[in-house]
Length: 416
Image (cartoon, rainbow, N blue to C red; front, side, top):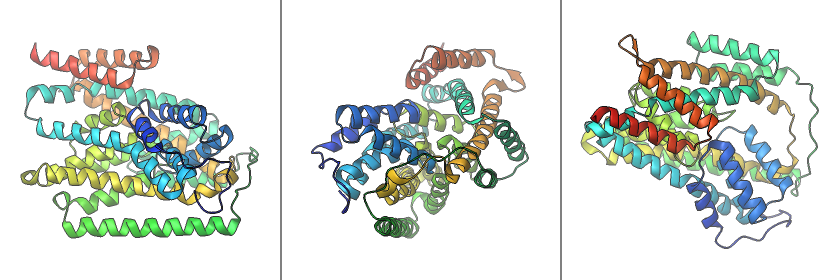
């Protein structure tokens, strides 16, 4: 445990790594499902955190860029075993999903000329359209709660449709949210057990160490010319992806997909496969970058595949999660003294309106590509998408089952 931390607190838990690995392997259902699993394990079953501290940590993780469930697991690990405990918890939370996405990306790349495999990956299209449309609805209900938020969402949608870069849209919305008072009082919070000077020294040390690790990793991929020469571009793009992901992964995944298509790492149809892999596998949605990184490396040097693909997947994963680890570990001693209702919270609310517009635009793009073929609407695909939406929203069938069913239907259509 970090020096100066109060002992409310738990002694380092023997075998805690098993818990983090189990949570990572069963973390389906998006951030809400993953947070629920973490709550059951670390609060209800293990009592490693109190309810109050769990909620305080969750509040901070929701304000930070990056996957909140992974950051929450990292914080819980830090409370048990200091920085090493946090790194173990966060890594094992991500590892099962990253390995599975890498394996599926390999299958996709190697099987593109195999009709059954190609049909299976093509078949996820209607399910992905349903997933994205439901995400727009779900996030929209939480984010659009005032005329100002609605106006921001509409303005952001227009700006994005006219070609304004996504980072600029986020910056403008965040600035407006920061400057315009929300009128809600800040909530009270416990003081941190570390004095203010200790908190600042801890944060500065973590940030310095993270910057040094980032620079060392960047130097390695540059010197080795990894992923067919694309590793430095992969590292830069997916570092930016995490830093821009205020409001959740869906805030930035559409932009990352568009950037990947523009760079030739994905084709338009592969956006569906990338999203399906992120949605249907355990772990954070931002693991779509692992899929993208694999294909970027594979396509850059097919003669060196699959090694180049594995290098691309590893590079994308490492650089997407390094900033996430750094932010939560730097703030960990101050978690219980950070107030909700702050200017940062107001800025995040404003960014949330832009996120809704971003997801809605992505849903429209994907629907057009999935349902319209040569100017004709594919009625069967449209029906499958409607059924998938009903299964997800109405019947509450788990996402992996819905995606798998869509793939099976596509294979049957192609072979019968």
